[in-house]
Length: 156
Image 1 (cartoon, one colour):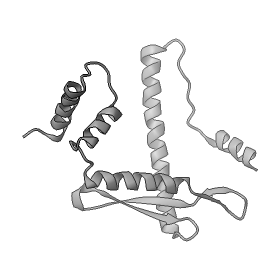
Image 2 (image 1 turned 90 degrees about the horizontal axis):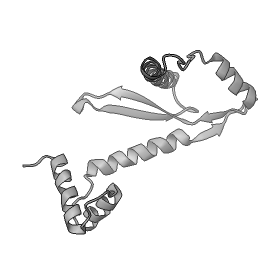
Image 3 (image 1 turned 30 degrees about the vertical axis):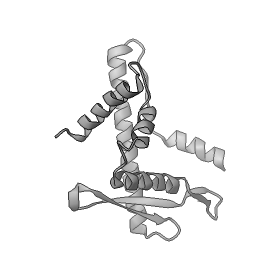
Image 4 (image 1 turned 135 degrees about the horizontal axis):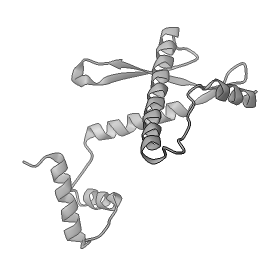
């Protein structure tokens, strides 16, 4: 029995044969062909994953103006470990009604995500500098106090 990915690879070859394409093609074209022909349909879990991803993005984009005139993100998630299948449970709450504990955990998790992004950026730039630009290395500063002060000055 072929694995799911092997089946997808076979579907690609079948598409090329049936449509008569031997050169480049788009995955969207193959998808339309496969779905229209009844060869593929998204598993229910994929539909739910798409919904949760879209809803999460929508909630991240929701803002309100606080009493001091600041544009504030309204909804904030926290991630909790879940026993079953190693999944994470993500709980969303509204900043205007959330507990301090929820907001503190959300802020800590967002900060850790920023630190992880900075760490990967440092690795990438260090590699570039050492391997491609040793004579003129890219300089990075990870002290964001001046940047934050500048942004706050523009907002006020």
